[in-house]
Image (cartoon, rainbow, N blue to C red; front, side):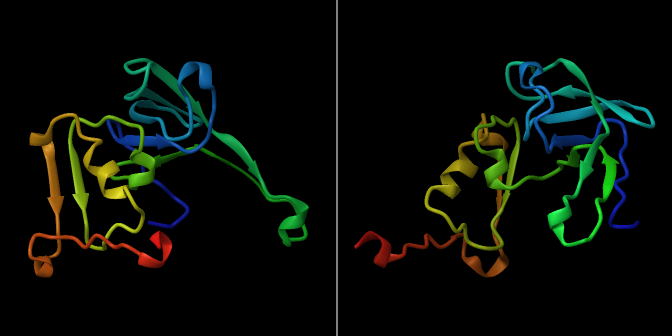
Length: 150
């Protein structure tokens, strides 16, 4: 599959990459699930926030480069402002409540409080799973930079 192509299917979880209509709950980071597709639009059900359960249409939008980009011309393309969201970063998950959470800690978290944010997204601790590398001895390092504290 080419890198410029995303294959979408019904019931795929997606996340919005742009603010489309804040009053309708279509904001950057909104999680949705695809319910129908057409050539130029996707219908999706909102999964998070005050508008959860509502359906919305996500159209293709124009994205343009500027003359200052160094290309020497303006490149215009139309694409859906969405990304598949089977997984997401801790930063994207911040502020959301999730029914099931799996945390992959192959590398230690790099920011103070980031592990807390990841753990606290899950609404039921019985649906929380953490995967550590085999050599981690069931621990992940808590990295503290003393020079920042002192």
